[in-house]
Length: 328
Figure 1 (cartoon, one colour):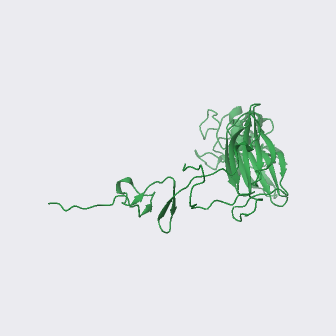
Figure 2 (figure 1 turned 30 degrees about the horizontal axis):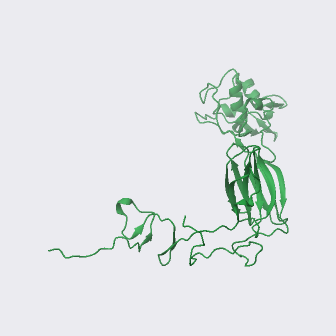
Figure 3 (figure 1 turned 90 degrees about the horizontal axis):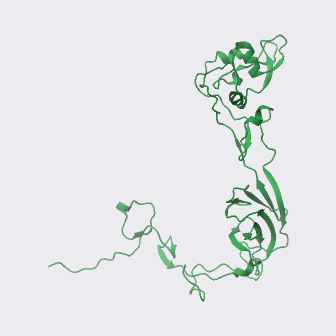
């Protein structure tokens, strides 16, 4: 006869293990847990208790206003609320974490109802909008205890080769706008002294190349190869060096031009090829919020009074759930 016995299948003594194949998963471990707080040192679990409101939902005034997002910005020690209304508009509101969750200031960030995503970079906060408007950048300035709200214009550098109908090493006898753009984007817009002309007149390098060979450079030709210092000590351009370099079928470096991410008008660059389009700044100020004198909350040094945080952080293992509280 078989001897009777008991086997404990769910002792979970090995704790939470997430990096194991399901085919070799160890006994006494879990791959995921919900509503438990795990002590990693002693592998002890305690049920995560419920939550109670710190602030009532009616803090956000306005019959047509809705709270779209709420984020605690640790760098500034303030809460950032995103509110929408029926106008339609979307606002950013800064709240102090005092006993009344005091609204410090509002800044409109969209003329539409949008959803947002928020990411923190210490003293910076980045907010992206679902309607593809420019991202919002908040910067907390410790010296002045203020927040600067900016929009960010995104720009990209053009490293792509426009389809000009040519092979990489082909040197055409006529210059299309597409090939001209490819050459200018690779640096051929620059004017240098012509080594082959008497007196070394200042000439566009692409013109110097054509005057020498009755054809235009290929997408493999690099203008920098032809830059030389002549016997007189002058920096000049000699197209012979480019032709004889044997650069093969490898594309020359490119990326002179910069475009706004929503306006890729390459044709516009041909009129003034030397201007690369890089902006002096990508930020435009929407507003500045002064915080001086407004109480804030620092979770690293919580206050026990009723100001500057208002509510002391919850004990991680309360004896009982708050009245009416539920385990989510």
